[in-house]
View 1 (cartoon, rainbow, N blue to C red):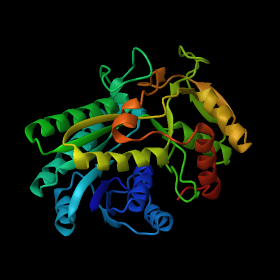
View 2 (view 1 turned 180 degrees about the horizontal axis):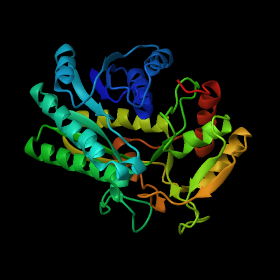
View 3 (view 1 turned 60 degrees about the vertical axis):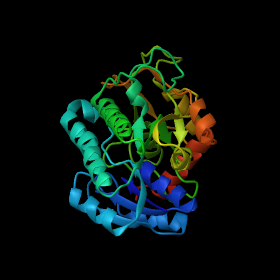
View 4 (view 1 turned 90 degrees about the horizontal axis):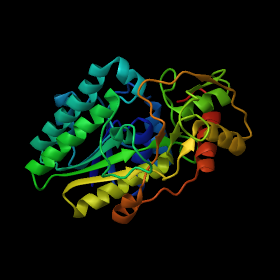
Length: 335
């Protein structure tokens, strides 16, 4: 079976490619390399012992999509392609709606032309907004508080409508919490362009000496220590969730909605302490004002994924920290 992975050279996409190959799938990658490097494809081949078929292009480009679907017998799509920084989305909302929403509509249009009726969508816990309580279940009210989250929710609604219009169409909406860590080989990891938007790559870049100081956004939240609390999940566990989603889709049409997280909330300061404990490396930090669009607490109830997908997060916080550090130490300048 052939799977098209859009955004497959990105952080989560590349790790998912490895797990798909290990599970026996042929993998075709589409990526515009706007936030990834060509070297990622070599690393996938080294780690998975099999290369992927790669196309450089954008999901907004119907011609490149048609070329891919015409050349390969695609069974399903795992859709990562999109922009994903909360802060930037507040500053540039149109960029997020254009890339994330319009890009998905173009992809779905071409999937329809070629009769491909299964998609696993990279959604986000940001669709829940600022939750009234935690842990968060899939049936909680949805109310994203930033354009990034709203773009993800818009795509979810489009996929719901598509499933309602075509009973044979299947869409798995995977609501990620906070992926961190790296492949245990140290060959693959998170390598953001420019200043990292996510916490862990900022931590590891400070630890390796690439940056002088970690900025902690806000210390006045209503949490255990005033810093934001998140559900950090190992990227390999997250990648395996996509493999299980594809298996689920073989038996189920329509919409499937699943939280992918550990179910444990960890504050920023707790993560910094865990990193030092796991690696022996101190990370200097300073508090700065909150970022627009951030919430105080966000962690998952992932029991539905356990009961219906047969999936649960296996890797703990210390392993996440160790693997992230091994990646950064082996690749101080990234890919």
